[in-house]
Amino acid sequence: MRAATSPFEKELLHEIKATPEEYLPALLEIVRGFRHGVLLKPAEESIRQGIKEALAGETQHVSELWKGLDVY
Image 1: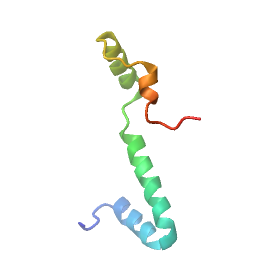
Image 2: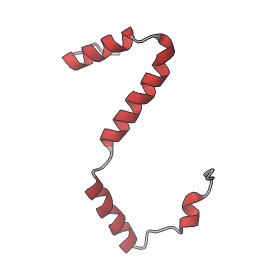
Image 3: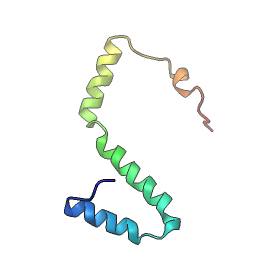
């Protein structure tokens, strides 16, 4: 692991090290969720892509979208 270079990295590492071991799995999920959230495409870009795919006939029947999911 490379050494932290920015003040934010240093603060994050300090907070992680100060977190009790039993809370680290939850903290990891929070950090991953945050990262995935900020990496999502903006809504407008996502909608444009969806329209483009629909107009090109790149669609699936709704029943196909639910296959393999446990829906109650």
